[in-house]
Image 1 (cartoon, rainbow, N blue to C red):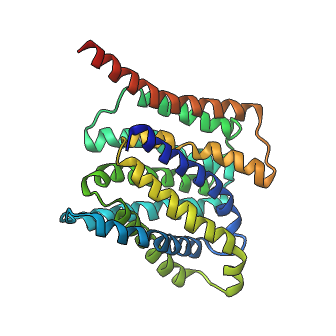
Image 2 (cartoon, rainbow, N blue to C red):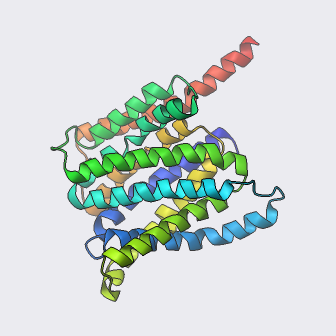
Length: 297
């Protein structure tokens, strides 16, 4: 798979997640956040299972020691992000949540430098700041006073950054992206359902009322999108992946306009353009740099 194809997979993930913001914000009118998380990732497990079986038959290389432990760590980071984002949506606006979640674009290169001592391509830093600015403009160019939900969503962005960084470390080395995906789904499903059983009531009416959102989040936002993320990140760097995944804010605004009748302000359209420009810079500048080096040699 080429880097361009990998980035297209990441862009597809961003599009699916963008639509998922609508499902996440409406599901909690009928069901608790922990049950929503547990059920959506249980469905995602079923989506990934056939792919895991096919992968196991085709893979000759045995699973390396410690791989399942590493996959579990990724699942814990994913669960942390899912929980803090979902609970954050109870007391913050979708606009604030979309912007604050997008802060992982900045967190990923910082964590990469701090913990991995890897220096990303120089274009990542201005592109990350551009993407963050674009998300901010897309939110309307202003944030209300920070609430408890806002603070939870900032923590969510940190968990997403950890998850993206860990996938960047472990996805390529194991050669088992489908198993990685299903393992992280399993961690989220088990923890979500266990905690929900302890702390949240559940009824048939609640599940029925939120079923369309649960199915969308389970099949598409959790299953297909996270699998596309894992596959795409095997062929690109974590900081570059974060830029493309940040397109979820752009798609969230689009689907909010199409499905909920929300209006994008002129400042919001500027934000869309800034995010798109950041994505183009991440894609084109490294490619042009490599061509110049090859030409020089």
